[in-house]
Amino acid sequence: AYGIWAAAGMDITLSDIAFSLMFWGFKVGNYSALAHNYTLNGIKAVNCVRPMYLADIDGLVATNLDIDALYDAGTNQTHGLYVERNATNMTFTDTIWRRGSGYGLHFYAESSGNNGSRNITFNNCTVDARQGRRSVYIDTEFAGITFNGLKLVGHTQNASSAALMRMAL
Image (cartoon, rainbow, N blue to C red; front, side, top):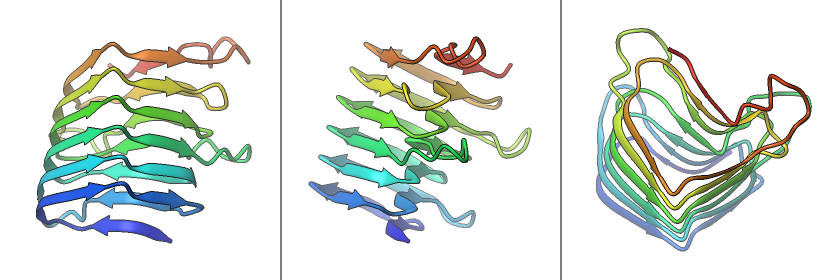
């Protein structure tokens, strides 16, 4: 089930919305149109498989998000924030991502050479992956990701999961 799926759209503001027990909480992207200038404030997601999925968007300002991804021991595919192709000029401030059996923040390049995702900034954010694989995974094809005041919380299950941030180069 979808909470909100915005295939495109322009100058959209969403405030004080809660999602619970959904596959997709908030999803932007549809391969054929580009979304522009979204503002999110006070969004809360609890036990969603992919609470936030972003692709095909230029311009997003997100503040005070509280994202709690579903933990499913049978898979590593639940992520707090999943960013894919053509996601540009986004800023996240005072946000927390927690749980999930995959990554707190997952930047995925679906294929080499056509991602185009860049200029993504995180200010005073926390990624708590004590129940997941890693806090942050950055795949190839991403550029200009900036972390200011980032707090990473991980676990020590095994040596390969102990790395809080992994970058594919």
